Length: 384
Image (cartoon, rainbow, N blue to C red; front, side):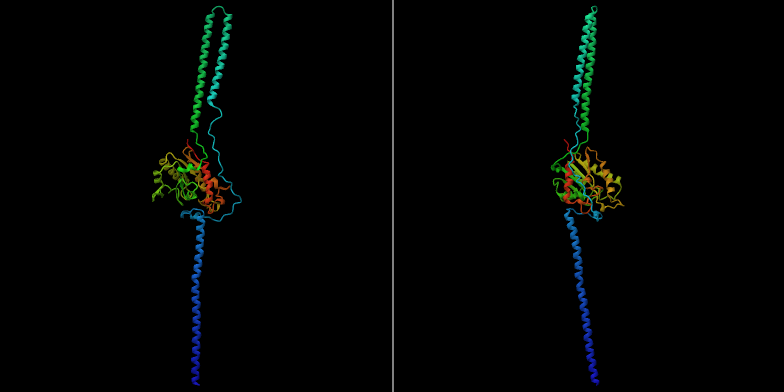
């Protein structure tokens, strides 16, 4: 009996040990299975993030430009679709009148001279007839009267001749002054062909980088960098000169251009005020005038932002940008410096960048740079 109890305890202990071991093995298997599932989840998360980055990169590549670090805060924000599309503002513009009048001043002077001479002849003929009648009536002192009449006629003829000559000189002088005034008139925009830009330089930020990457004006030169501002455009080393990076100021001293196009200022729209902006622009224009004295300079207005991209309560908005565009337009003298309102090409009725032309609310998509080039082709200055 005692032996039976001992055997029963041994069997019970063995069964308990087996049950505990089985439970521990099951728990261990469950733990290992859970650990094995975690890498798969992390891998899935990484794959998803990689797809988002790839999608962003694909969209950026599709636009043929990259957005600089200083422009990250300007990235696309959701916006309500526009109810209407803006009309194409880059329509053809006919060259302005050359200021010539329909009446030739020299011709008018000649007609006046002829009329005066006819009047003089008629008057002389009338005086001669009067003298002849007087001679017939007078018998005494006939020769004296004839001499007096002849002297009077001579004096009248000399006086009339002097008046006629003076009118003729005045007419020529007036015509000469008109010609000089015409020469001093401001030059007007004309339509040109693509070869006009073979000696052109474009200075600017990512918008100008997009123009370069569009390859619509391949013969032109470009001093541009994404994210650069008006305060740094002259000093920052962004020009590749034989493998060495130099500043725009140095590059301007080394090379000569016939035309210089500038679009700059949106990246430091939050810096300083309008007066500061004008001083920076004047510094750029002074540098160009010193290094490129024969160049035609074009100030291009900054292209506006879309409605959703703006900070209406801060400084990053089209209202502030319009003030700077207006200030830069006042720097154009229409003789050597000309203002081009590029914003009118892409703006909607409210002055915002139309959604038709952009994906990020800030830059123009590559297929719409042709509108910009077309505008430039119809707004060119040609010096004879």
